Length: 335
Image (cartoon, rainbow, N blue to C red):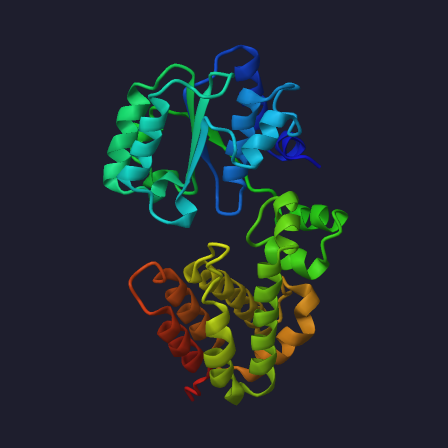
């Protein structure tokens, strides 16, 4: 399945709205794509951008022409992406777009496109610079902005964009579609909590970094299920170094730690469900989770602490110390 097929099947309002805009040559100079966490906002924005420069649109991007592939490979000169997922977007980042797009387009299409992913992660100075650019955009310049929380986006930015709302696909459907793409059931169950598209889920399931994180997570659950006395040593010598990130790939320790804590919270939620005699979400790990739930004290309080640590990771805390505190808290006997 191509990404355009995903949009057509699961996001028909977005697909049809943009298709009609292109067909009627009434393309807005700026679009705001919104949706909950897990919805493929950046990928959708990229697909719509491709549709404006595709060599053989039918009616939107064919995803295989030279221009579309250059977008994928980040070699299309008149296309810029600022990704708020990677960190706060600053004034200088926006001014770089303004400076580049004030010049004559380098590509023969004459169309200049920029994407700002998660605009809620812009600082105030960047927002002000963007507002000025949105008010008086150069001819044939198009913006695709995305947000997971529209209430955090300045109303003056929202008012200058045509809004496209994306919906969540049911998790069961995502898992079912993933299995059809030969994703392992265990990976589909885990990653459906993070990706609302089977295409993206499959891609992530094959990444070495994800597989390493999954192994790290399973090993922690096994130790906690068997003999938690070994867990402090394991965290200090295995878990924390592994979460330090891979600088060559540009992966931050914060991103790794956040993902690990998200998986850990999933295990605790299922353990609490087991105590309440409710079905678990991670069915392929039911046996391990049964042992896990039977050994650890104060599951509910530990889950709260996991979520608390995750919420403060963007602040100036020492993540290694925070993780050590967490594991001591989880294994402490509070009786």
